[in-house]
Image (tube, rainbow, N blue to C red):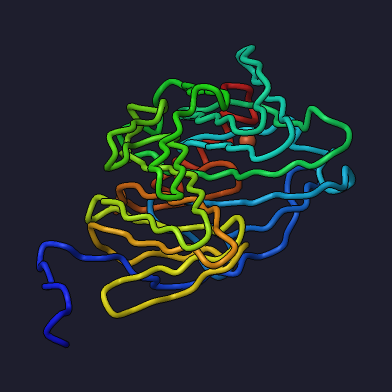
Length: 292
Ligand code: FE2
């Protein structure tokens, strides 16, 4: 260390990149082409995150078939659209369209049956679906929705080339996202950095966290370590209470997502994620006999 190096503060622990996940091309629903990052062979889960899919196409053949009627029990599905429109409809009569920049945070709880269908017949459709686990005590809660269009997602502009869309959780700049009251206390930020701009943020020390690069490239900086991620890569972050990201020369856009691990047994069977095999068998029986 040179004499002009900044002093190291033992209370600040920067998160570094533990693993880089390239994503696994697959199809789901009635034949929607997507890339799976969490819930894949390379990363089966990142407690409490069970699945992360990224879909992006301007070819209707890749997405028009959509996700017709299917059930969920025991966790939450989070849809965040970057482009296009998706209609959501469920067995209880809930119905709405998610548009670009909008989010739907659906707590499936004890069970819903829903469909998620592209509303458009051409053009670009892009976005994410994230599955967030529920603690054992809430797996049978009543289904609930948080739905917000782009206009209700606050944007923090820091003036140094940092623009943050806050979906849930809060930033060090004091901006809170509209989705609140979620069991795992998540943070979900959509961050845009101008070329060379830097984001520094605090994160809950024990929370699991990842970054997904949408555009450009970003350096993850932890003390003397620097790892570079490029578009369409997911980086699993180590534990720590700070993050520092520097954009490359063409800028960057990425998601920063974190939440509290549950450390509970996970038994998953398709759209059901429970704690025991008996609960999965019960879910299948309940669904087959129309009790959702
Ligand atoms: Fe679904």
